[in-house]
Structures are given as C-alpha cells and as structure tokens.
Amino acid sequence: MQNPLILLTNDDGYDAPGIKALEKVATLFGDVVKIAPDKPQSGMGHAITINSTLRIAKRESRDGFIGYQCTGTPVDCVKIGLDKILDRKPDLIVSGINHGSNASINVIYSGTMSAAVEGKIEGTPAIGFSLLDHSIDADFEAAQEYAKKIIEMALSKLEDKFCLNVNIPKAKSEFIRGIKYCRQAQAKWVEEFDKRQDPSGQDYYWLTGHFEAYDHHQEDTDLWALENGFVSVVPIQYDMTDHQYLDRMKEWSS
Image 1 (cartoon, rainbow, N blue to C red):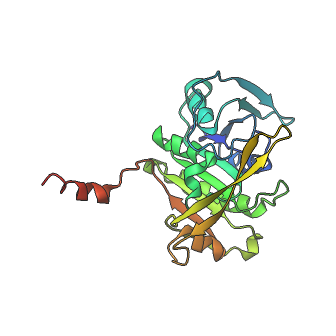
Image 2: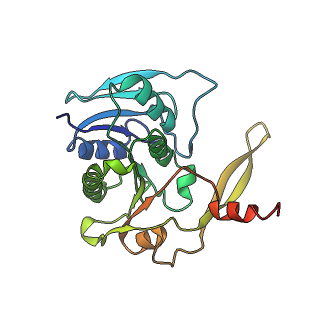
Image 3: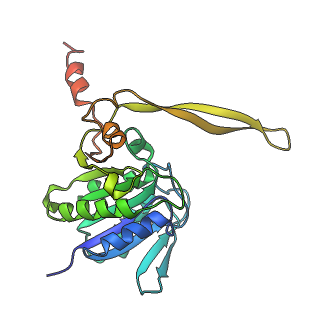
C-alpha cells in the first residue's frame, strides 16, 4: 500500500519559516512534495500567470528532501505541480503555515487559501493553515501541534473532498482551548490610500487601512473562536453563487 502523497505549498515563499514548520508535520504522514513560490506572494488571491513564463527549479535540502521552487503564484504552484511534477494525484494538499490571519474576509485575498481552493477545484482535499503572527520569528510550535491533529483527522476523511481554512491563535499550546468548527465571520477591510511623493515629485500611493468586523461576537464565527483562544476551522467552497438571492431573482420575470 502506498503512503499518502501530500502536496505542500504556501504564499510566503519557499524558504519561509511557516512552510518549513508545516513540512515537518506533513512528513509524519506520508510522502511530501513541496512546490512553493520563489518569493513572497501574499495577497495574490487566486491569481495565475498568463503574461509571462513559469520556471521551476529543483531544490534539495541537506537531509535529502527534494522540493521545487516556482516563479509563479501559489495557484500556479498547485496547477503546475499536478500537471507536470507529481507522478500521481495527491491525496491531500496542505498550504501554509501562513504568517498572519486568513480568517473572515481575508480568505478572499489569501494566496495561501487560494492554493487550497485550487486543490478542491481539482477534486483533492485541501487545508490552508495560518498563524496569527506576522513576525519572521513567530513560534510555530502550537501551530504544528494543531496541524498534526487536523491532518490526521483529514486523512481519515479523504472521500469528502473538503477545503478547510484553519487559523491558529498566537499563543502557547497550553493556552489554546481546542478546535472550534465554525463559519466565516462577516467583516471587511476599509482601505485608506496614503498619498506620497517620490524624489522626482511624482505622486504615488501606499495601501493602508483598518479591519472592521461585524458579527465577531457571535459564537459560531471564526473571529469569535480566535478571540476566545480556539483554533478556528471553516469549511469553504469555490461556488460563489448567491443561491438565496437567485431564488428571489426568479420573481423578476413573473
């Protein structure tokens, strides 16, 4: 019987601490192929490369682990991995561990989660992991512990073809209260573009802003779970049809 084949990717780049932490966990469960961007690709969402070439470079670590570095986006990594690198369909795709939250509306912008969603589109179960700590020196010990638990559970449910958005609080393991299965909280980013001038006097803009959450006090949301010390797990899908409003639209022509 073959070991499970796990495709590992992220959006922070091939050498980011988060993906190295997830690599250590994933290799406990099967054969891991790492295909990740050659540079940070945060905020790329579901972008793909169509106006330039894609290049792949094989990377080998000191312990003999072989991975692939891609010049494209996280979604490019999944697509080219499935089509050109892997010799069989993976049993599971894991993305992350992202440096920073992908809870609530952040899932829309996240390259980490878009890579996972691409897995679901291709019929492969997928999980995106994120730690609520942007620091390059973030402590991934608790995130690894919960990634291990969730991957172990996921490998027993592969027939379900799920896509999970997992966010882990910035806390030591002993202060995390467990796992909470929940829905995506309603929220948005309020953009504020800071207008500046370069040395030649030309205007340019720097994106800033703040996060506004609307229902994070409701106990069935991912933001509530994280604010109250739980790991949040949200099942997501790529069908963006507003089915409720579609039923209302049927009345338009009546």
